[in-house]
Length: 598
Image 1 (cartoon, rainbow, N blue to C red):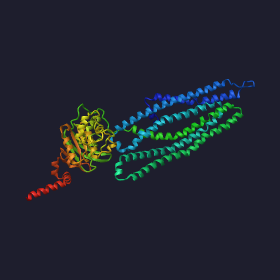
Image 2 (cartoon, helix red, strand yellow):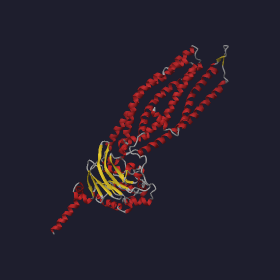
Image 3 (tube, one colour):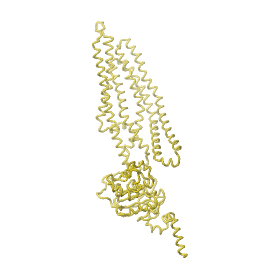
């Protein structure tokens, strides 16, 4: 019942239309008894005739035209009202769907990273499309058909009770058998529809992942292998559908038998009641005309059982997203100010864990505005997590992260993140123009500024060579661009928000050393001054940083200091430097030896 209440709540703004349509459906359905009653009157008064009380049968042919015109008027009234009723139903349901989908999309935007890490994109897409459309279908077509079936059945039974209650009672006794069959089907079918929906989610998720990874698939010539994998998901979805359908087919003959048996009952018992004089020929005609009004609703409800179970499964999935909550929310009185933050960053003995998996242990460092911190360490040591904590994509378990002396948990989220420019290692470009991607953080960014930031990221040269320059549409996820080109556009996008804090997560890993040096030289200019967090494993990317933080594999700090200080310690950083500059250092050593020999 709670599911139906939730659906009704989401019709807010359309309740009037929906109720009007529902009332019209009730009136239209109840009028089903009008035409048979007119037909019965024509048979009894015009065709057969009635006893005038003295044993003489009198016919009233003068009533025929009036009754026929009345039948025509009722027919066209029902047709016109049905058209208007369907329009109102669809306006209400489509409005509800648009509003609900907008709310769900806004909900997705507000959910934190931990929710996305536990959810499959294919499943979320199914909730926004197929599941939501099933809710709409139920709210209009299913409810309309159900209302029509129930009202027709009730109206027919009430009307027939006024004619002959004994005969009608015999017909009503078949209904409990149908309800028993319906309940048994519901208990059996619901788990099957849930399984079918799960298989659809798996199929959508696999297809989306495969489309996004098409370059990798082609690079390894795994097209045939991926087709085989897709076929497994596709067959699993088919089998789940067939299992649910075959379960329905087991119950369908029983339900159809109940509904069709009414014709036999009416013919047999109606004939007896006519022989006994309890029914007139016209009244028997009414029963025969309304036999479908008793049997068809049963069949209709039986057919709607599938939709009922599919609706409940889909609605529950949509409701899970609807009521999902983010653990990262604004405080009651969020901190923000008119100007940008200065950019001072303090990590005070920070410990962080994903569930029970500890990623960072007692991280402590302090950055003044305008300084640069470089972070190095093995894969999985928590480098990217440090960057995520600054933007409060996650909350620390112990300690605190502060910007300008204020804990990030006290900041207004929009204010905090709008002042942080991020260029992540997993570059995502939207299917928009190049300049739209660069100006994503500031839609009002002037064209000359777009180009200025592109120049700073060394992206201007290759952008100008593209078919339409800055107006070139970038393919989905930046397909058609090299890794280095995507990284440079992402860097320009991060710079374009004029951040107080700039986070570069392996941003120059796909560019050559010369290009990398050009980018660092550009960022050293006063117009790009900000506090920087640089995550990299190339010494050339970090050697000029004010501080260099070396992490252990367990997320603790191994070394910290400037380039010169870490070189003197001859630890991890020194070994990395020597490995990456082995050819250069050996050349220097040989030259020094030759000079000494001379």
